[in-house]
Length: 113
Image 1 (cartoon, rainbow, N blue to C red):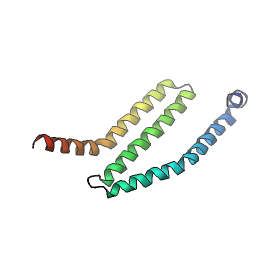
Image 2 (tube, one colour):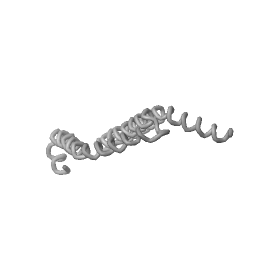
Image 3 (cartoon, helix red, strand yellow):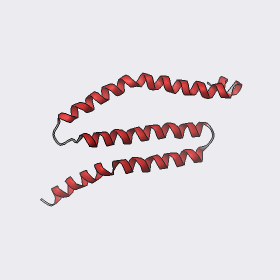
């Protein structure tokens, strides 16, 4: 990649995107296994399907944000990478508010007993 980047920067970017796509395609079977395990959680009492969806969305936002920040850093935009990471963290916390609220509700119910 380093040789290609110095000789043909445009091809380097396309090659980088291609590598990312190949890596994602390689990880997809593992994601299927993870989703199968999470589907089994639906049969356990006390675990809400909505909570699992929210956690998966938060994880996805964090993963995509991390990749975007790394791309910014690779292109010499460290300040932009920091802003991207900060915004992604706020979005993840915002998505997790219903789960946090449910946990706090359960905790206060135990304390008030």
